[in-house]
Image 1 (tube, one colour):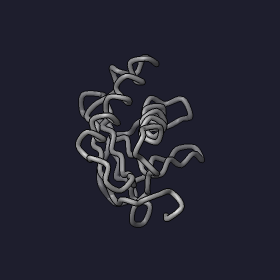
Image 2: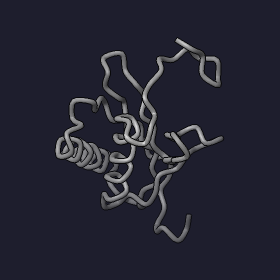
Image 3: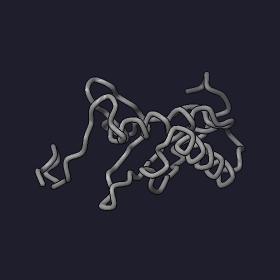
Image 4: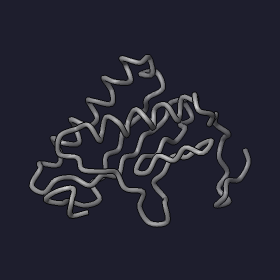
Length: 126
């Protein structure tokens, strides 16, 4: 295992345009943003919540390799004010699980963590 930019030892993962990690991150982000009540995904302080590979940068989603070969997905979202958060998180997870199954990536999908970083009355306020 080689140390990453922060000096943490990580296993190498494929990161090309067609990599499973990047495909899952794209799929998760698209499904989250298509969920009613979600306004946007945010990259967080210093761009920490980003999946990047080969010039592509997906803000607000992380895809981390697990020892069993699956990928844990983390989403960092801004949502509409007064949306019940637990049901919204479940809708986001369900959409991602369904989409991963539809495209043949369910085998690689691990846990999905949905974090609500902020709320807003409308997209124009952000």
